[in-house]
Image 1 (cartoon, rainbow, N blue to C red):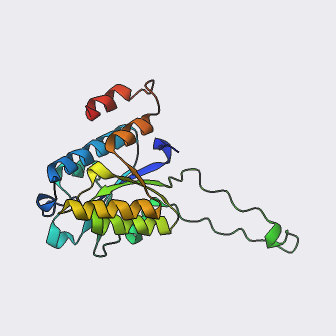
Image 2 (cartoon, helix red, strand yellow):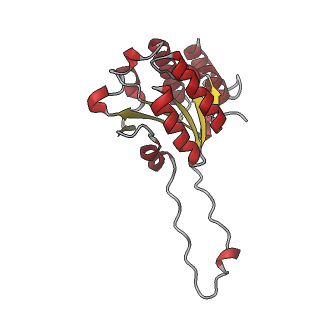
Image 3 (cartoon, one colour):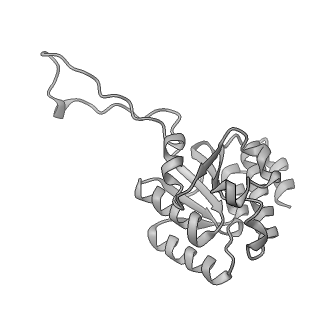
Length: 202
């Protein structure tokens, strides 16, 4: 199973300016998040951001703000799935009413899903063992496909970060890297944006 850009949304969890200096290898983690956001923008993948207690931890870092304008969701809960779900998943269509001559409900066909559904969430963020992990688990519980970009995730310590990855893999999340995402979204070297994406990756 590979990622497809047309089915994906990118969610950047809590890259906030008061938190990032405390994250182990925070500069590298942020650099990969910026690469992901640039590639998503080129390939028309929607990008969202969450902010945990922005009054305390500050806003999303300036370098990411152009990619998430109008799509920043504030939260207090560590699990951001509750604020994300109404935005990333289209509302269910209302059930079709029947009349006396319609088929019994158990024989009626279910309404087709919305054409624009993007049920694959590519997730990256901080801290990996708290908000990132809890958000991922919340989305998985809602039967959403979650792909965690490991080299764009961080915690204050390596041990906490790696423990989060172990738990996420066991829960069914796909663990990937920034380059995996980039090349899977492209699909092949004939993609019209291949050279642009390659320049970002390199």
